[in-house]
Amino acid sequence: MAEILALGLSHYPPLAGPDERMSWILKRMLQNPQLSEKLRTPAGWPDPMRAEWGNDEGKSSATRHRAALVEWMRKTRAALDAFAPDFVLIWGDDQYENFREDIVPPYCISAYDRFRFGSPPGNVWGETGKTFDLPGHPVAAKMLTSRLIEEGFDTAYAYKALHHPLGHAFTNAILYLDYDRKGFDFPIIPFALNCYGRRVIAQRGGIPMFDKIVTDADLDPPAPTPRRLFDLGAATARILAQSPYRVALLASSGWSHAFLTAKNQFLYPDTPADRRLYDALCEGDWKTWRNYPADAIEDSGQQEVLNWMCLAGALSELDRRAMETGFVDTWIFNSSKVFLVAPP
Image 1 (cartoon, rainbow, N blue to C red):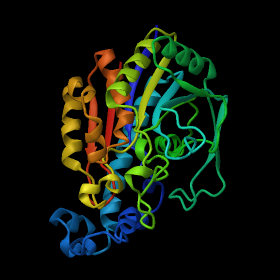
Image 2 (image 1 turned 90 degrees about the vertical axis):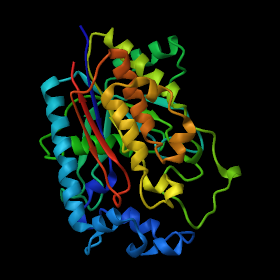
Image 3 (image 1 turned 90 degrees about the horizontal axis):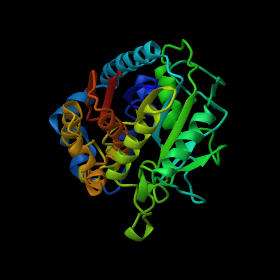
Image 4 (image 1 turned 120 degrees about the vertical axis):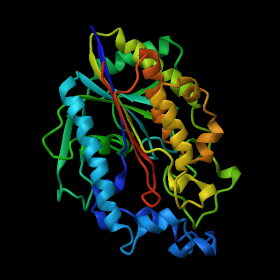
């Protein structure tokens, strides 16, 4: 009999580096030549943003931010260890890693035998040249792909990487779940989504390139809609609930990103919009999630929330509410971070 554990976490890249570098994205956004003069120094920032920046350019706040994130990573890992899944399916965004000019599918399941990747340079663990080597689960990946296609979801799949061994939404999730470096041996099935949509090629799925003005003509076709991904997550849970496997379903992403939120001049995330979605998540208000407008996703810099749309759809299908949730907000560390643990 299948059992499913649902999890959500952030793959925030600066967490892998030291505290003194955690605010580097904000510092990069301050170089925007279009930034209003008022916002170029902390004197013009909102009061809570200035307080978080402090007199050490956010280093003290970074230490506190890390502590909050690592505490949730450990809670999530404890739930994973207690459940002992046959594999972990990870919904994560491909940020111009394998979804590039030659092919941009709406989503793609990686049915690899193994996944090999290294720690990022200058990491907080002091690792140099370390390689992680994790098993995949191609049998389950191909079964899931087949069933999704039969249910009307034209799902791309891959047996090997096209450009990049494994996108950072997946590698960072594993690095952070193994933050204490006790090992991570669970087989994985990465389920990559084109969350960045209109900016996956135009902006290379990353921070704005201020030396290049992106016009409407430069933009790409949009990402899959929240409704479609919600339904995809529901179908995934339904299929796996009928399988013989114990499965952990994991959404890996931050929520609103400062570098995607034009209305905030790319300096800080749309925390109020994130809070509204978070409240709906905690209440099991799946109608709000499924009906969330695609233009609201872009307006609030919430592209990566599309990973959580799949998780929300899965929770709805399983008729499950979260046992534990956490919201870690910030003004200066680029994105709201949300965590969820929903055991069987």
